[in-house]
Each structure stands twice: as structure tokens, then as C-alpha cells.
Amino acid sequence: MSKLVVASYCTTFLKSEMLHIYRQVTGLRDVQTFVMTKKKQNTDRFPFDDIEVIPAPRPNLFRHGWLKFVERQPPIVYRGEYQLLANLLERRGADVMHIYFGHTGVHLLPFIQCWAKPCIVSFHGADVMLKAESPDYAAKLKKVFQSVPLVLARSRSLERRLIRLGCPAEKIRINRTGIPLSQFPVARRKAPVNGQWKFLQACRLIPKKGLTTCLRAFALFHRENPRSELLIAGKGPLQPVLEALAVQLGVSEHVHFTGFLSQQALLELYHSCHVFLHPSEMPADENQEGIPNSILEAMATGMPVLATRHGGIPEAVEEGRCGALVEERNYQALAAEMKKITREPYSFSEMGLLASESVSAHFEQRLHIAQLEAHYREAVELAEEAEARVQTEAPVVAPPFQQERVPAK
Image (cartoon, rainbow, N blue to C red; front, side, top):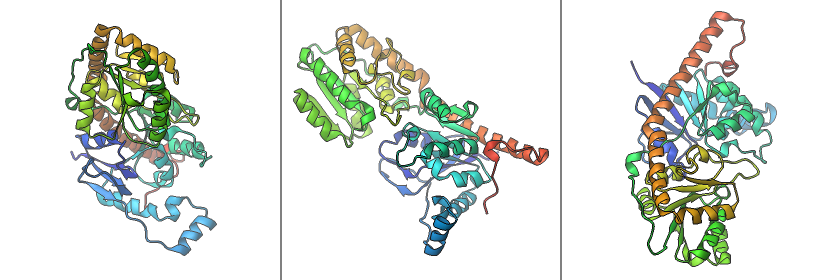
């Protein structure tokens, strides 16, 4: 029996923060996959042999203008992308297309509705946010939900958000992005005898990561622990703001911005630090976390985590066992937990080991890759069953994800 062929569609393959997608695509074993993308990026960091770069369609200004302004067709039609996708998928013999990110699913909606085979869309966090520049985004998302057999969510928190946005609960499957444990060996940590505690946060430097909360909490902790240090690994637009805040708080000499690190350098940093911080927060547009990869990686190496009750974080960090959780933006509570965990060296060390055990039990990559492959097979089976009902029970209306679907020309 031949393997299922999955087209993994990601508009850019891959941005630096999309390591979890790379791990998924390269981790597939029981299905065959190729990548479809409009742009290749960071190829040294994310090498992959089978990538189909979707060519830019040849412009026909008259046809473009007619479809856009007279017929009011969506961008995928008037830009000429539709037929390019159909031809590519037919040539590769794809059985199912996995579309990464909800906003890409919205863009591809006309294709999803008309392609003869099933698509699934996975949601990762930022793609459930409200978009001021696209007021009809939520309405379009509902159409995406109607047009696919399955929807994937990285966490239970995202699942609840998708349901509020109109996705039928029975269509949602949890699709956690596990980590390769062999790449993150455990290091048993001991409390520093000289009080030189090292705290670490690794993430993109953007608002939802709660970095200002982290800095303010560290400043409070540092008053009583003047030899402590905070390391912030990552890049992003907030760095100048954070550097200025560190100066304002009087801790700039003890806060170190490492920039973006390779996986090996980041692993070494995990092993050299004591406690991981990640006080994520929900912005007004509800751009939220799934489960941050860096939390899972830090836990795998034996670091306890102090974070917030945000998004999918409580699904990974068990309070009182793997670390502690506080409310969003409450830097005083975070500082209190930092003081508490460093005053109990035995508890600190044991929490780190329990964190590692928890990741091993619940977030091992191979387990979640196998589940993803099962979701692909389920999507194909659901589409085949729906097609059979349409053919044998006409004029019974087809299920929503099969309506309007006709074979691509």
C-alpha cells in the first residue's frame, strides 16, 4: 500500500520562529510529504530537499482588473494562483493539503472550497487574533471551518478560542508540537552557593511574551539578590524598549540580551541557567500563545518554569510540580515566586527534574507526529465518506466541508 501524500503549505518556509513547523514536516514517517511555499528563507537552518516554490503567475493586466474590480473575485483568483496550485498538486499526486496558519487558510479559501481533495488547517496562536485591517476575518474563518473536514489546534486554549470563533468542536483535533528529547539532555541543577542565580527567557522580543513583566520582576528580585542575572535570548522589535527599561530599573548591567542563538548555543544556555521565565500576556486582539517551544525545551533540560496562566502554558507547566504560574502582567507575584523558589534549593532542583519527566511523558515528538499522521488519514477518510454519501443519497445536502467542491480543472 502506497503512502499517503501530504502537501505541507507554508507561505514562507521558514521564518526563524517556525522551528516547530520544521520539526513536524521533517518528522513525518508514515506519510510522504513535500513543501509548497511562495518564499524560501533560512535554508541553512531549515534544510529540506523537497520544496516546491509556487511561481508568481504571469501578469495579465486586463484579466487581473476584470476579475478584481468587475467580478469581485478574491485575490487567489485574480492573481492567477488557483490554477498554479491545482496543477502543482495534481502533478505531485497529493492526497491532502495541510495549510499552516489560519490566515493562510482564509487566503486559500476559494481553492479549499473547489479542490477535489481535502485540506486541513492548523492554528498556532497569532492566527486567532482579530485583525483591524481585515474586519471580515472572523466571518471568513467560519467559512474555512465549514470547508474543511478537520481543524488542528496546538493547545486546548486555542481549541476554546476556535470554538468561540465558530468552529464546530467535533472538527477540532489537538495537534501539539512536541520536541525531540534526544536533543535536550537533562542537567541536574544545584543552587549557586554565591547567590548568582541565572534566570532565562528565550523568545521573540514581541509584546505577548511579557518581557516587560519579566524585567520588572527581575528588578524586584535583584534588590535582595544583587549577584543575580537575567538573560534574554532572541531578537525582535521590542529590544530597544527593553534595554531602556532595564536602564530605568537600574539593572542594565545584570540583564544580558544574547540575540538569536543556534540550537546548540541555546542548549548550552539552558544548561548554564537555573530558572526559566515566560510571563506571556494576552493583548487586546487575543493574539495568544499555543505552548511555547522554549518552555518545553527548558523543561526537558531540567529547568523549573515560572510563567503565567496564559494560553496553553498551564497545559505544560503543572503548578507546584514543574514550577509556578501567576496572573498575567503581575510582576510583583512573579518576583515573589522567584524569591520563593530560590529560597528552597531542594524544591528548586526537584521541580526541574519533575519538569523534565513531564515533558518526556506528554510532549515527546514521535508521539505527536504519529497523531498528526493519523489526522491526515482521518481527513481523507472523512472526505471519502462524504463524497460517497453525496453520490448515493442525492439530493441530500452534502456536509459543509464538501459543499461547493468541484474537481479542479
